[in-house]
Length: 404
Image (cartoon, helix red, strand yellow):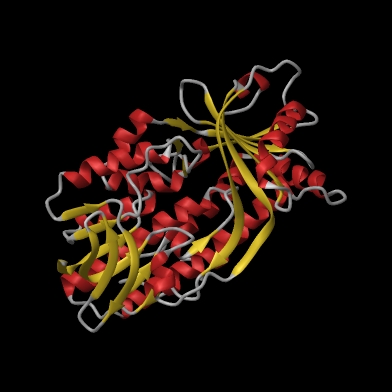
């Protein structure tokens, strides 16, 4: 049995789990990370856009500088109308007086994972366990025992607390009897990594392509010319013929004779779902294990990051300072409210604009709204600063979220 009685077992070795483990370790807490697979080797299109609101937190963790060296930053993103070529732009420079890092980072999640892992491996009170799949867990007044299938066979991991950061299909969430109620959208999204110079068509490094039929998220991945093009299709269409329909999509949206190379693609369902609570005793949930949203706003990844920030504060208060564990209930309450009152509504609105804008007059009405916003710096600033609500106020000085 691996035992860290005062420590935390983090289940999930994706970006949220690793970021959380690093933050806990830097707070002086023993951490064990259990991940069911090998470290992410990349290849399949995964998360790559890190919202401007996260930059200060990445700097606090000591990983921003290296991330900037390996990724791409941008200040300007656009809404581009496919049919007319009209482009409306947002410039994060309008936030220069409000935040230290007014830019968004594009970096494949496996690259960020490599940066974090290098730091974790150098920390003696961090234990990383790969190919270790959670089977079940039990908890008592003193801690939690996780039983996992490891390369050495079935093994027990004992710690004071467990954090489930193992995604929408979370084994931790299921082990504590929680579901993930909500809705599944009637479309799937298809994320493709392609070699094609979308900048030659007037697209910014990050863009929303608006069209009643062919809405898409378009973003440059790296300086070598790899781009991410994400579109949607009816969920009822057969998965086995996605590649055939994909070719039809690119024929519609790109100029005749366009030289396009599809490097990789992945298809996923889109959800708006949230657990009833993010805490059951000594077991806590964060990010996609606690809530999932569609990818159109960029708020999902950032929201999960700020779950971690708040949870590290709460666990540190309990472990190091003897705070009443009621602070963990406040973590659950505050972060759930951020999702239900900000992340999910904004993401749903963004998804409807991008992939359900075929109602009579809907798209033109939205275009007129964004024309007004983008034509004025103060309106841009007001629109962008809504994302500040993704971050919760410190729990020990305030009992409610900044949304109240």
